[in-house]
Image (cartoon, rainbow over all chains, first blue to last red; front, top):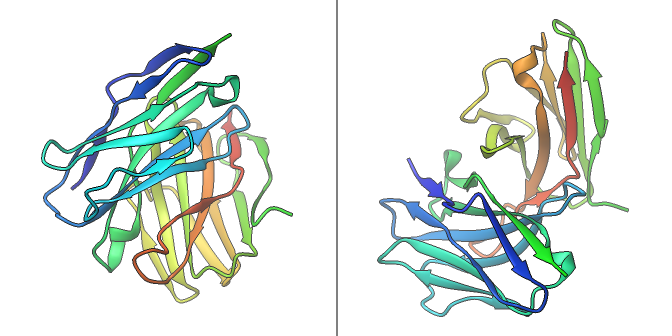
Length: 118
Length: 115
């Protein structure tokens, strides 16, 4: 079974600074997807960024980028120019790329609560 | 209008009561999921459905049941609620398509408190 570990329960960053959230995962598969979801106080789960394991290039979405290290099974999220609206719980998630059964489910880490200080 | 809706948004009930949480979607997706979120534990899968006739247990299905009334509707029931089921519940949907259509879209969540 796959597991996802977020070792930082809480992080804080100053507005306009850069912060990196860590995520490691354990899997025996070679083809999979990794995600970062944001959950603000509104509770809504919002997809921030996605990475396909077969792609070597790190995904980027505006101020959000990832550092995907497949051999090390590491998938960190970097937020540049942090804004007050970035304050939220961030979840790392894994999904198998194999079809069928429960492979379509997302396996989540326990989350990192990010505080942005003005 | 939201693509994935959940009712109710908040519910307080008593131990032993039967509770139904409802999820509706207008995205036209085939796959629907129910997750439970507990503080410090992330989200865990309760049940998932690939179509109206295909319902499967997730990792924490004990104490829960589901009904897929239509492609767009997926309900979660707690037959006899217990305080341990106090949590935030999310419904999600995803497309049946190829490898690029794998994003799960989440509803706004239902906060359930069992006294």
